[in-house]
Amino acid sequence: MSAGQPYTERELISRVKQGDRHAQYTLYRNYVDAMYHTVIRMVNHQADAQDIVQDCFIKVFEKIGTYRSDATLGAWIKRIAINTAINTLRKRQRTLEFASDHPPEHGAEEIDDSPARLDPAMIHQAVRALPTGCRAVVNLYAFEGYSHKEIAQILDITESTSKTQYKRAKSLLRAALAPNLMQHES
Amino acid sequence: MNLEQRIKEDRKVYDQIESVPHEAMWAGIDQRLRQGKRMRRLLWISAAAAVVLCLIVPLTVLDLGERAAPVSSPAAEQLQRYERQYSRLATERISSLDMELLDPQIRDEIATELAELDEMYAVLKADISNVPNAEALIETAIRFHERRLRILELLAKEIENQKRNLQYDEEIQI
Image (tube, rainbow over all chains, first blue to last red; front, side, top):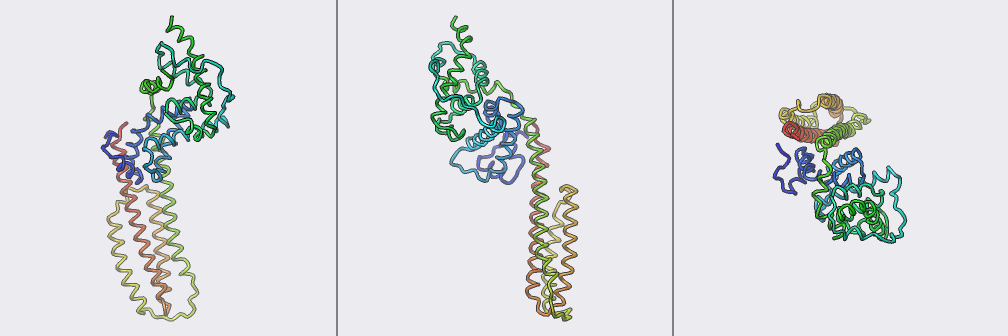
């Protein structure tokens, strides 16, 4: 049997609440790809990402009774995954390291106006090489679509720090991608 | 074009850069679910047994004072009627259970607990027969039977879940 059973979301949730293994597996297959990509971008480490995704789904199965439909199921699961990933980063590093709040002097926006279209794999690699705090903000803002206000709550930082870190990240990305940009332009 | 726009547009490409180890992660989740379920089952059995024991033990140690010998008192007869009624329901319920689906260790634990409860109930029954005014004790004995039936119903539900999960385990192929 494939995981793609034609459950409605309500049926799926109800069955998962009852501990139905097939429903749990269906829910897992529906969301695992998105969760894994979100988590690995946050923690930058395959084994940690696998552990976090497993923890995340165990939590989802245990706490699905507390899910309220004011957010989509996907958004609820993603928030659990992100919180679990942040906790892991905190445990690993004790605190998320955010560099100075002073905004970069130049270069923050330059990456955006580049006429050359960089290979997404290069951007991906450059994002992965960012310092942990910067990377968390870029992932939450650019990849996951959270606002700076939401990121401030998730990471327990100020909204201003979130914005500054995002600018700094863009500046660092610009510097990291500069050789490739020059190649494209020449 | 800004960074977030570019990322949004290329989102699918980013998500294909890393392959997802579905099988390995599900195996880990599955193992943890089984361990958790087994622990919950053991806790549940212990809790259920504890509830029934708490109900019974105080009665067996009551200092009942006057001990008459109304072996065939109305109270004892009333209890016998309830006993027959609940015993029939319990027998029906037990015969419908597919105990083979339970983990053998858990099955043995349940059998031991039930046998111990039977022994304690026999003591309680002897006490009831020797008390002149045993309405409260009879009431408690009836509650004991009701609890026992409830435990059997929960057990039936657990076996059903186990049956369903076994079936899915065989069918799920990643």
